Image (cartoon, rainbow, N blue to C red):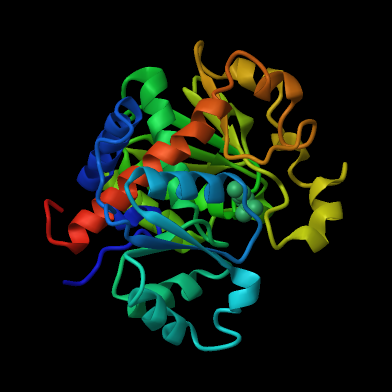
Length: 315
Ligand code: NVA
């Protein structure tokens, strides 16, 4: 059986995304109800970039699903450097039931998925962060009872992995997603086209603009660091007072434009006074701790979904 993967947000159909979110909610209510990794079966967790939440939530999550998390240090493994990615994939696929990988280019994880023979989960690449989006959508559902028809506005670097994942995952969920960024940092046109195709299917909508009026009436306001992992050498120009992102900082004034009862989300790590004001992330609209907890439940759900699909059981 050809395994299913989560490499980008639109690898899940709208119905499958809803199924994963339902399962995540069920796992949150009853933490040990699914045991697809009973054995314990191993899941490789590989990090080529820094991590806190992702390593923590996958380690705990795999154990809670009855499995054994197998941590692989990407710096020691040197995947694609010491040996071809395909060779690493073939070795891993003989020993573990799934592979979770945080890495750089999307092509690297696609190559892993091509050869592994087991489900591969994107734990963040330069292009996407689909696990974070499942956690965010679960948080939106908890706040409002639904996701379809809600408006989510992302402010900041419109060209990064989070902006791309918001476009694809929110369009899949039937949301109105708006990327508010400087013209110099817009989403990849190919990703935007895929998101618009999805929105046409689900009744969602996708907008890219530099006009803060896009925040007016929004249900969810989100942002992300202006300096993603791998961009550290550009930190001065991205964070300084001449940064193109300064007009898109999430302040109390920006939040005041959103709907009454709007919530604020941030994937973390957050930089107070840079992309978000402390009074917003530490204020009453913030749901960032629920969002961080929901990584655990959402990732357990997606692993369960992919493992069932791999065994031909109820996919
Ligand atoms: N855009 C950020 C997300 C961190 C979770 C990064 O890639 O570093």
